[in-house]
Image (cartoon, rainbow, N blue to C red):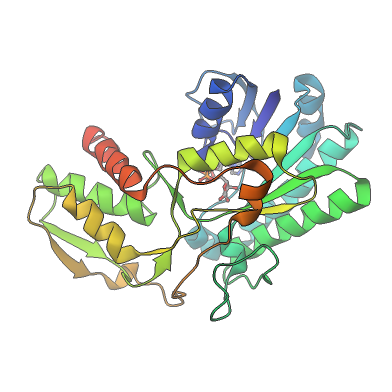
Length: 314
Ligand code: A2R
């Protein structure tokens, strides 16, 4: 099998390249001109906003599966740059879908990576959320990802294209930016252990319940969907078991010998925190046999070890 990963220089891209290569796939990955892909693979430069550059690349690479990861993926940046978010996540996706369509190859599978954020303001009692649950996005990023998924369904139906949509819930692991909770807590602990900050953790809302999956499990799901996912279907990807953020904090702290105080940081509190977000993951289990295998404790331990061994990363 041959994959083309669009947006391969991000957090997930490196893991997906490794996962596919370790399973015998040939991999071509693209990045922006100012980015760098460290994994060994066929590397190309591509900005999805330069729409005329995409089809020639597809004609040259001839992938069986296109993984579309390129995105503006931060909720907070999406509030500050709504036009750019829509440009990259919506117009960029149209550019990718149009280019695949123009190849005239109905055998290319395109996998659109969306987000659990798309469900947004969920009804009380709606968890675990099935893929049929209405989408009520609560921020700009989520709205653009919901739109991406709708476009995928429209292109699949109108042009008989092979498109699979994914709604990935929180995922984490070593090298993730510390704007996400597991990485944030682990980085703070590593800095405290090195004496770079006071022994005091700054935390946000600890009672929110969220579903966390290791990024290495997530990319295994992406690989399996490349061959076993049903064309035109939407898949939730997650553990299927939400935990309180408090549990993540307690687990991370239990891996350190330091005596660390915990304090509430208003800047880390979100106004619209939804009490519980948990997916139903029976569809992906039924169609591909996938389920999350790496424990949350392992993800937290590996993230902490990453920050301990990379004091230079800020
Ligand atoms: O924004 P940058 O400079 O970090 O670059 C991101 C890249 N990207 C683009 N690639 C091609 N053409 C563009 N116009 C363009 N704009 C941004 O896509 C970055 O290298 C990559 C996305 O990676 P991350 O932001 O690290 O996301 P992550 O965690 O790898 O998530 C992958 C997918 C995204 O679609 C998320 O929305 C979804 O999974 O959850």
